[in-house]
Image 1 (cartoon, helix red, strand yellow):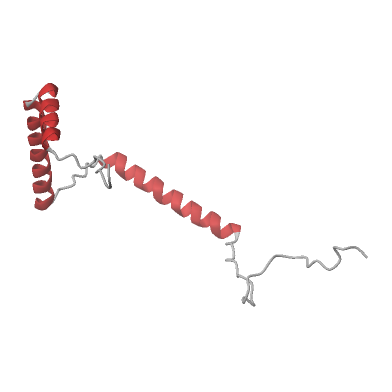
Image 2 (image 1 turned 45 degrees about the vertical axis):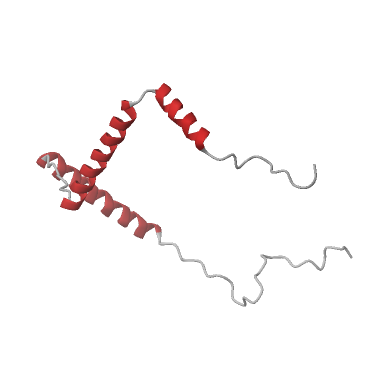
Length: 114
């Protein structure tokens, strides 16, 4: 008698589930082929219509979308104009000046005697 004789053979099951999970049945090959042919015929018909008509679809934007894009472009132009007014040297000078006026909060305060 081997140590593996008592091992259950088969798939593992979740606790509390008495019934196994049911799998969906696959369609028969004939049904799949019919479906594939129908889709192919439909696609061929659309290609012929599109090539024959040479239609151009124009997507109109709503008034809100147009206003949003206008304001977005306007703000971007303002940012570019503001950044272009000062040179890098001036920006560094302004930043250092700002740092000089800040309190030195990162210093370690002296606590206790000494």
